[in-house]
Image (cartoon, rainbow, N blue to C red; front, side):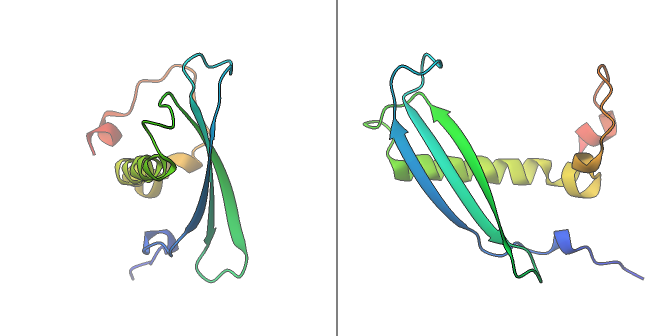
Length: 113
């Protein structure tokens, strides 16, 4: 019998909002813009929505990177994160593992996938 996992289904569409602020004088010496991305989603079969806020810092001034370009780069990073780490997160359940020894070489089998 094949067990279907809910996490393997395609994701429902997400809503996101982006706020960009140009800043000077932050403790980050090269920071020029600060971004706040708020993502909202609804899981399959759930009535409630969940929300996640992500902050990012870029060294590009507003003249070189508009809000639309920042949003595109943030989505691109998310795509890379999802495609590269999907196997480790879903198949090997790496995110659920709570045992993290201080010094441990990376598992060659997981790194090879």
